[in-house]
Length: 254
Image (cartoon, rainbow, N blue to C red; front, side, top):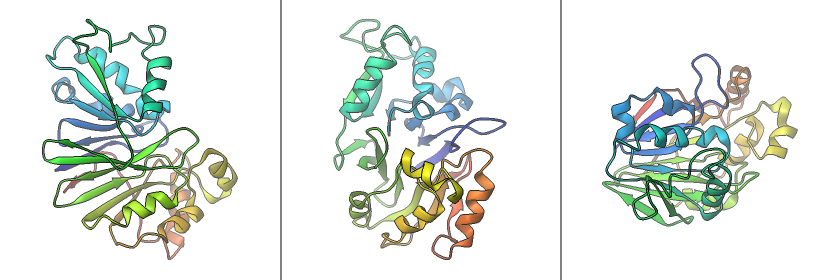
């Protein structure tokens, strides 16, 4: 199983792209602006999109991807998400006002877009990998994802302030090799991080103290302009000094 980071920034500008992860060549975890760097051939291979939550930086490329590939595919693209997220996409994105309802095009029996409701703890088997939603604690309904090749696992927190339920599940994974965890703000903005249910370096340390295994830990969703400060604060704390900044185009072979 190959996992490629298409985007991992908390914003745009220059070469920065927002959250999107390509698993093998057929699955996206979130669909931020990084999806736009894929070739048309690569876009055509994407059959499944797993959405953590409905904030724009995580879903912005879904409508454009569908519009690009819809006439070139024989099968629909399936969006996997919780019911709350599916309802938001239906009401506020694919509503004919913001974007066409591809769940009805070309007709309801054979749409370009299908939805699959997921539940925390229930895995979805796609070829040789299993993708399971894990708990997240954000300002809107959200999940993270556990991606398991059978041999190795990667866990992506999505946007979260952390939760006991998340660590309860993660600590049961016996083949966890990589943890990608967000830290969106510096310690100077700890109050804003708390209000928006994101992590800062101080709360990252508190969260990682719950982890019982020793995977490689990578930091994502750094705010542009604050990324250097955030990583310096993370490096200065002995509890988090081992963490590395996730890089766009980084590849994990699991």
